[in-house]
Image (cartoon, rainbow, N blue to C red; front, side, top):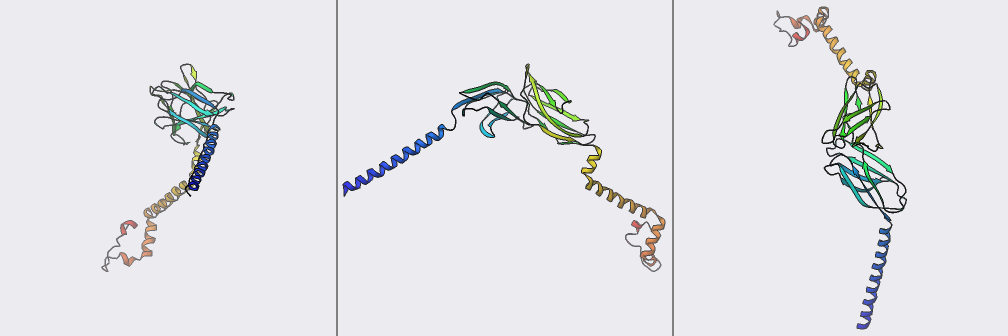
Length: 269
C-alpha cells in the first residue's frame, strides 16, 4: 500500500512540474512577442513639463522634463518596422498642451532619436471672440524662446517667452470667422517640431452674436415692452382716470369713511 501511495505522489508531482514548465514556456514566448528592439528618444521642451510617448494611440512610456527642459526616454521595446510615434505634453502649470507626431525610417534594430525640440504648449481663455472683446493664448516653451503663433496663413504673431518659459498674447480685432491656432518656437537657432493638433476658435460679428443669443435678446425686448407699457399707463392722466372709473369712485371716497386703497400711489392718485 505504501509503495502505491508513493507512486501516486510521484505521478502528481510530475504532472504539476510539467504543467508549470509549459506555463513558463508560454509566458516566455508571450513576453518575447512584445518587442524585438529597443527605442530611445530625447530632446527638450518647457521645464518640468509632463511628457507621454504614444505609438498608434497606445501608451509606451512617460517622463517629466528637468528644470532646464531636457527629457529622455530610454529602452522602450518596439517591433521591427516601428516608424511612428507621438508626444503629448502638458506644461507644469497646466495652462496648455500640445500633441506632436513624428515619423522615422522603419526600425530594423535598436533605434534612437535625439535633440527633438517639441513645440510650445497652447491654451485658450475662450473659444469665441465677441465683438469688441478678446481672448488670450498662453502656454510654455523653453525659457526666452521665440514663440510663433499661427492663426491663419496670413496671421503669424511672435511672442518672447519669459525666463520660466511662459508666454501670453491677447487675440483681438479679427474678422468674423473660424480660426485654427497652433504654436511653434525657435530656440538657439533651432526650430521646434510642428504640432499635429490645433486649437479651434471663432470670431463673431454683431449679427452672429445676436442670432446665437436670440432667445435671450427676445426676452430682454419683451421685458422692455412691458416696462414701457406700464410707464405709459402711469404717466397718462386719461388712462389713470379710466382705471379709477373701472375700480369705482366709491372706493376712493373719503366722505363715506372709506380710505384710499393701499396701492393708490401706484396708480398716481
